[in-house]
Amino acid sequence: MLVKTFGAAVTGIDAVTITIEVNFSKGIKFFMVGLPDSAVKESEQRMQAALNVSESYKWPGKKIVINMAPADIRKEGSSYDLPLTMGILAASKQISSENLSQYIMMGELSLDGSLQPVKGALPIAVRAKQEGFKGIILPIQNAREAAVVQGIDVYGAVNITEVGSFLNGDLEIEPTTVDTDKEFYEQLLHDDIDFVDVKGQESVKRALEIAAAGGHNLLMIGPPGAGKSMIAKRLPSILPPLTLDEALETTKIHSVAGKIQNNTALLTQRPFRSPHHTISDVALVGGGSFPQPGEISLAHHGVLFLDELPEFKRTVLEVMRQPLEDRIISISRARFSVDYPASFMLIASMNPCPCGYYNHPEKKCVCSPGVVQRYLSRISGPLLDRIDLQIEVVPVPFKELTTAVTSEKSSDIRKRVISARKIQSERYKNIDHVFCNAQITTKLQRKYATPTTEAMEILKNAMEKLDLSARAYDRILKVGRTIADLDGQEQVQANHISEAVQYRNLDKAGWVG
Image (cartoon, rainbow, N blue to C red; front, side, top):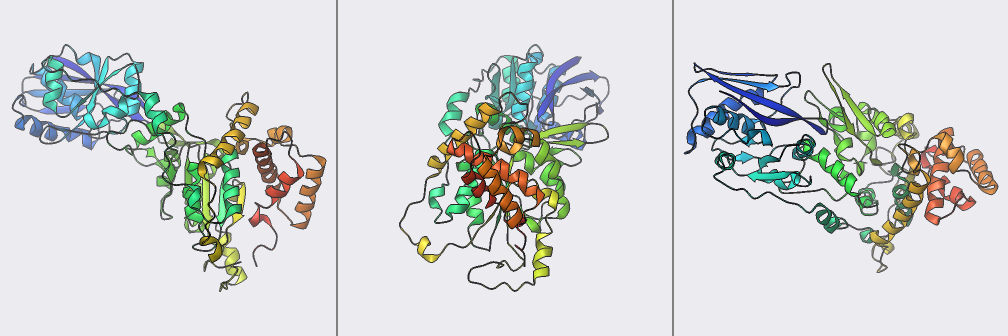
């Protein structure tokens, strides 16, 4: 008897429906075709063990041939165990095959027949809805994640006995429902950390506000213990809240990577990813033999924080150059290619020298000027070219640490950031792939970031007196445009350019030695 069940393969952040055909004939062998990997082939042992301990079902003693179509898509992982098992049970007439065509099923089997959670539940549910399936059957741990998709029934099951009884019509499983809007808005502004905890460092907090308002990348340079990491971790609390579409896209990426916690429906906070400096280039940008999203994709619509930037391998840093510009990363292999979104803000921090105390107000640096220069040159010019703000962080004096003065709350800063982003959204609404000032081209810059005559004179003097590099010119104008938006000004004024010039520390001649 030939029976068909349906599963799904995740490619990139989207799913493709897989048709699983099960056929019985005389004999006792087990064959599986259709480009399954080792984990899929090992399902035979898991299915036999699970059915042998089941009181309701048994492993059929016949020749079993399973085809997984389309055959040109590689099937990976153990999540096909559930549809394979249901196909075998239906083909051996232990369960009804009448309703199999209405559901996509995915789940990993334990040896006792219970179901373990799978990756990619959200994109699989999206595909099931698009292709007109009545519902999707998943491990109960994935049910809320998949139920974010409206218009399709999501059934969470504990074990194969439940699934078999449900397909037979002997057991009714209540569909899992999630009020997506309620789930989204209830958790939207719940931040555990706040800028109110940061004492002093007003200039640095101002730089992060500008970065958040314009979507600019930022580099902090300062000695150990100055508060660089503490400040960076609070950046998501002043970024504009995720929109529902952004939350769904971010959740899809984390779902594919298996980073969604059990029983979590939707990610509502902007991601903050902080990989260690020993990370490989594949782990950062994504890929591998079986491609998975990297840290830059997990930081999509959020922040990627690279602490101790010069300690990262040169190759790791260089692979970020293209994603920083295109906001997407393409992973190409001989047989296929996948695209992962990678629209993130890069926030980096570093010591000014190997010992960490160059330009320190109290402690003496023991590095020679040549050593300092070589340390800073670990970061290539093209990468620095993509960082709009460079701010020096100095230690907070004891007096400021012990003061009773309360710092500004993240919620107050966020209001100004949202207002500036609304101005930019309206300005660039008819321009494709441009949403904030950090993304504007030189042509758009000439149109929208034109300074006044007085501001241009200040920029000219700064370029000459501080011997700023050519790359600093465009960056200063972009940052000046964002500062003007924060002030609600149509044109870039002299005070905006003056402030923007302060955020180009590494471009100043003589900054090193």
